[in-house]
Length: 234
Length: 234
Image (cartoon, rainbow over all chains, first blue to last red; front, top):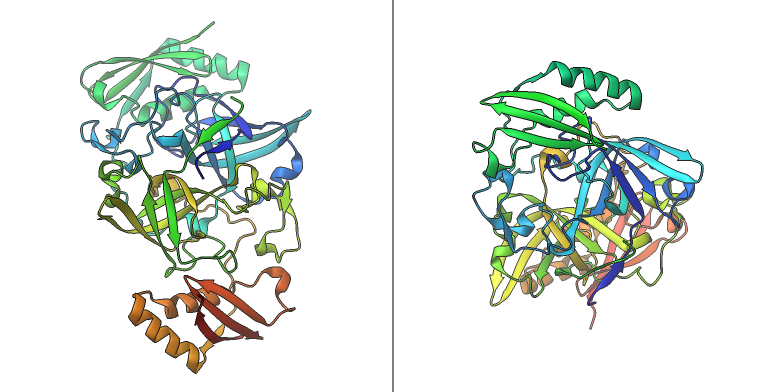
């Protein structure tokens, strides 16, 4: 078997409209939401019948924005401070052969909107417009492995202090009223997981980040993080 | 993005040389072993460097033996007694669009044999000769979800009594001496998870099953299972 042709069965509509800041794994930012739209000919109620018995699902997807960049035999994972190289198969980096990703996410709702079948997800780490290759139920007795070792991945966040400027707070309130999107909580969770690339820690102190159609400017002073300004892009 | 071309990065050499009896999920039969061979140009030590920090890995693979059978919008999962239909995306059935599977398995060893790079795995549910599309580390903090609900999947095995015939016992002893393969324990674990298809329970009482090059005949009388005969195929 030399090559195999696969095709998207769905498309992701996500709050992450650019790569910067996307959580390193699913589940890290609970407020991060996305809608998975089933594509024809898979946009049929019967294809996902019974999936709502499960609280979580696996989404297999394509790292579509790195396909053209190709793959690399080794990469420097952010967990190791961006300094040590490990094999691509020892990471979940997008720069892998076949460019396939997988994420365990919470299945919040399955709904129909005219002829569209939509899965509402949370705890996501998908870039907007990601093509979906497969959906599977999360099966705890085989997927949740007690005592599995975490290699070099560890959650060891410093206690980050976070504040919002007056402008940022006011923006969030009116944006939430207008769109129903809980952007303040999302910004908080995003920044608390410290989305700075390892290479930029200690070098830059000001950052910009795009969530939906909102550009967020924030700064870092030691362990004090501050959201300076939020503004809609046109 | 209409279609995507992927290609195997590895090949599975497994104890499961036919479909019948393969565990429904990985991890169910701990003694089930396989070797994952990296294929050129991915057969390089550096591609998996650091993977040995992790106790478990995800293997993405192709259900190669169902590609020609195509996909189905709904299937009857064995967990529901083979009677109720659910959507294909609410199952892990091989008859799915793109025919992609994934299993969390134990990484026992990574070794080099001349120019071949081999990953020794256990707790597998792969058919022999399965093409591998990707390898990823198992990351407990995102993959192991506390409190995820199991839908219709439940392990609720009746206490199966199992005995081996004199011939079967003797065969296992000499096969193990000759090959180093712990076939008796494997047969025990295979049968204790009751590999009968839901459709055949209560109808047939005698079954045949192939493990490596060994044909195993066994029978069921109520909750009493007996391994009748083991024989090497030519």
